[in-house]
Amino acid sequence: MNASLPFDQLRIHFAGHLQENVVMANYTTAHVGGPVDALLPVNTLEELARAADILWKLEVPFRIIGSGSNVLFSDRGWPGMILLNRARNVKIDTRSAVPTIWAEAGANLSHMARQAGLRGLSGLEWAATIPGTVGGAAYGNAGAHGGDMAGSLILAEILHRDNGRQSWPADRLEYRYRSSLLKREHLPIIVLAARFKAVLTAPAEIQKKIEEFSKKRQATQPPGASLGSMFKNPEGDYAGRLIEAAGLKGRRVGGAEISTVHANFFINNASATAQDVGELIHLARQAVAKKFGIKLELEIELFGEFENQV
Image 1 (tube, helix red, strand yellow):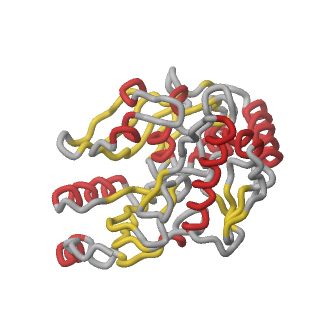
Image 2: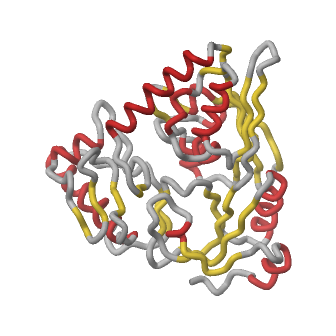
């Protein structure tokens, strides 16, 4: 691991809360991944903003995670610091002329959408089956069932390393399919909170749609520990279909398996390593490229080094 991090200063700034040499398998939805140099839980927006400011000033490499989906940490570890975002407040405004939903970046996206539905606010039903956080969804333009962040977000409250707190309208994030300006350019910016558009609707009607989406998800997506969708869908096609057509559905490497339910989900059957998952990524990319001439693009993000180019 990276011994150059200024641990003496970090311990002073984050006394009693800083965790060192933390295994990320305990913090990711696939339950795989090696150690990071340090991890810091943050429980409020102020704690998140303060921690980011300090780490930028100390020039400490850091990333933020919430639920731990869509990220794969190498078994060899990653030389930096993780901020574990637990700032989860949600405020639902049904009284204004234009109703909105505001949520801190660490709030669970599915829980927020379901809360809004119970209050008679529709527009986020698509999000009710997504297990990630608001911040991660804003960063990666999460979507499902024909909806996504690009179509639902009014603005994101961000913190810029050099320019402080700002409110960015959705178009400034330059959303593309499962991508944003923040994700593409790795700007020195973190998402603090987000505000969403909504429409007053009968709660029973909203609940019916959420139940339909939930049943569809249960029928088409596998249970078990996974990262979520592994690859982006190529234009006009589906990554899962391509992987299945390449003959890889059910293929295993170690404790990792390409799901027999949906081939764009790689499952940890209790004993997988991050390298096992990485080998399956490499295998799927090679097989699809050879059979169809299509280069699959990862939807997840990789941290650290893997034996094969994944």
